[in-house]
Image (tube, rainbow, N blue to C red):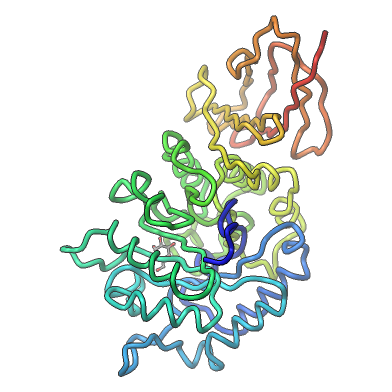
Length: 385
Ligand code: GLA
C-alpha cells in the first residue's frame, strides 16, 4: 500500500443499498456524487461514493471477468469512477467472498486476485466484501485474508470493508487480515428498534475497534424516513423521527462506526443535512486515536446509557442516551470517569448539538433526556480551585 493513512479513522461516505438496493445506475451515482460535492457533505468530510450489490451481469465473461450490467452502467465502471474522482471524491464497489453475492450476482470466490486487479483497473478506492454463498468447506477468516492480500497487492490503495455481519468471532481475527472495517452486525432497518439493537449489540466489542480497523455497525438510515425500495429495510414502517435519527448519528459517531449515509442525498431535507454535517459529532468520530467508548456503570444501558470516549486532546466525549420510552433524568458522577472530587477539577461541558458551552460542572452532571433522545458533550477538564 502506498497510503500509510488509508483507513486510519472511520471512512465517511454514501452507499447505494439502504435506499436503492437493486435500482442503481450510472445517472444515480453521478447525481449522488454531484450532490455530495455541492451540498456541503464533501466539505464536512464525506468522501466515498459506494455502489453496493446488483451492479454486474449474472455471469462472468468467458475469461472469468466480472461484467458491469450494460443497461445500468452503459459506459462501464471506469467512466463512473472517473466522474466521481473529478468531483474530488472516492469511488467504492461491492463483491462477496462466496460464489454469489447476497442478491445472486457473481461473487469473488476463487477469483479474488483477478477481481482485485479488475477493481484496481477501474479506479476503485473502497471494496465492501460480503459473506453470502460461501462454500461450506471454506473458512470465512481465510477468505477475508485472501481478498485483503489481493487488494493490498493490486497496485492501488483500496480500503477493504469486510462485511461478515459479526460471524466467526470476526473481532478476534480481523486485525490480522488487514481489513480496515469489519461489519459486526446484521443489516440495519429504518426503525428505532433496529438502531437501538445494533448499538447495544456492540457495547462489549468496543475494545476491539481502533485505528485502521474499525467496527462497522452498518450504514446509516439517517434521513430515510421510510424511503427504501426494500420492505425489509423499512419502506412499510415509515422510518424514524428526525430526533431518533440524531440519536442514531450520535451513537454511530461515539462508537467510531464508519459514517456511510444511506438516504437519497439528492433530496435530503435541511434538517437531515444538518444532522449529517454536525462538525462536533464528526470530530468525535474522526478523533485520530479512535478509542472505543466505555459504558459508565449505574444505569441499565438498554434504557439509559452513558458513553465516554477519551479524545486525543485530553478532553472527553460524553454521550447520554435515553434508549427507553419514557423521559428520564440521567446523571453522571465524575468520579466514575476518573475525576475524584479532591482533584479540584471540573468539566466544561460543550453541547455538541446546541453548539454552545452549557457551563462548568463539578462532581456531577444531570439532565432530563427525552425518550429516544440524547445529549452529546465535549467535556474539557478545567481547574476549579
Ligand atoms: C448483505 C449486506 C448488506 C447489503 C446486501 C446486498 O445483506 O449485509 O449490507 O450489502 O447484502 O445484497
